[in-house]
Amino acid sequence: MKTDIQIAQEARMLPIRDVAAGLGIKEDDLELYGRYKAKLSDQYMRGLKKEKDGKLILVTAINPTPAGEGKTTVSVGLGQAFGRLGKRAILALREPSLGPCFGIKGGAAGGGYSQVLPMEDLNLHFTGDFHAITSANNLLAALLDNHIQQGNSLQIDSRQVVWKRCLDMNDRVLRNVVVGLGAKADGFVREDHFVITVASEIMAILCLARDMADLKDRLSRVIVAYNLSGEPVTAGDLKAVGAMAALLKDAMKPNLVQTLEHTPALVHGGPFANIAHGCNSVRATAMGLKMADYVITEAGFGADLGAEKFLDIKAPMAGLHPDCVVLVATVRALKYNGGLPKDQLTEENLAALERGIANLDKHIENLHSFGLPIVVTLNSFLTDTPAETDLVRDFCQKKGCDFALSQVWAKGGEGGIPLAEKVLEVLENKKSEYHPLYEPSLPLEEKIKRIADKIYGADGVDYSPAARRQLQKIVSMGMNHFAVCMAKTQYSLSDDAGKLGRPEHFRVTVREIYPAAGAGFVVVVLGNIMTMPGLPRVPAANHIDVTDDSVITGLF
Image (cartoon, rainbow, N blue to C red; front, top):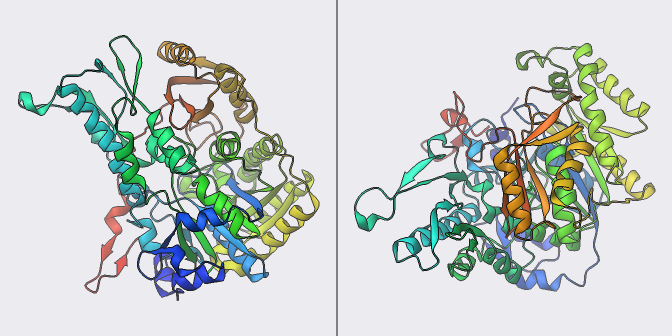
């Protein structure tokens, strides 16, 4: 089989002007980044307000293996299948982060014959959005340290600086650093930290902001430190908002690209779902609903992370009403959740599959609790056997759950037609009764308990002494009405990556709680989640190269 990048490089792309024309977009409404990428103008976005909304389809997944289970691949294939059926569809997806591209995952633009193009650009620098977010984040950090150096009129307590610098790369040695070493003019010595750009609150804010006014309002509320009296100091206090907004001006505009079969795709924003809210931008999703009859979007990692945050954070904030959920499973992930070692996942093992299918069962229950109709799809791999596929299909039928096999990796849109037809059938015959898991008025501690109980299946929630103090302070600051953003491992329903399948009789432990006041949620850290990942023993970067005629190889 050809690699993903070989397939992408052999594809014939349409000029993005032509893709846009198919959506009724005039060239004057495009800000071109070469022949195959463009940003959409603010003027075009404002002109869409009078259009009727299409149907919103959320793609999520069961708890994955470390390699991922192909949500993006299924999303792209489903969009292509809609096109083959003569339906007006558009994708609203996240931008990949450089860290995982050079780390463990490789490229993140879909796979096989269901990819977003240009694949190399998308996985690398794309249109510079992540650079703008990194720059805005680090400008705020620089202004903060400069304020302390230049007299510190806000009385910032350098022991209580909470704003971290960021970099869009996995780099473990930057997790904890010391800054200000050298001469007196080089600043005050203090401990500092880096997070990966996709974990920055600026990324979360960019993806939740409706417009420039909302962006600036959110930026102004970002807490950077506490003063000597223990009161919060914000980006607004540092007079940083205008300059940060200037850096983010173009990054606010959604990016238009295409799939291998020329389905239009809005690729914009990319917060990690085990750290932030894990969804593409509100602007891109809302715009897509005005541009097409069907919008396919995805939320990161398993449904216990990305989908929960889409349904409890993004949708309520943006006024979105999802119509249907596609729940992606794979035979290998089900066997992994059944306790089969990673090096045996390609071998038929019905016993492990039966054990692991409890994970799928729990995710179905969880999504039904939001009042949503579900289509389970099995993302097909060449190593899957007919007996394994039949077992999953039979399970879904016994659960009374709609099911379709997805073969989009190998067959592109054609392989997604059964799934597309099933989704259309569900949209036609089943009504979404979507509702969030909790109301904003519910106290923070109760929101945390409800997610742990209803979504994870935990028996209760324990707090470290530090987390308990942090919760009390956040409540005293008037943030009890905030949404809750749970940060935990993506590999388990629990906070322990080793508890696979459908764990029972466990409690989760809150290690840390901190406010993302600009984003409008409180981050609740369970277990040992890293906001600056490290590289694996053999990084994907080791296999990436460029030929003498500038063709990239090895990018998955």
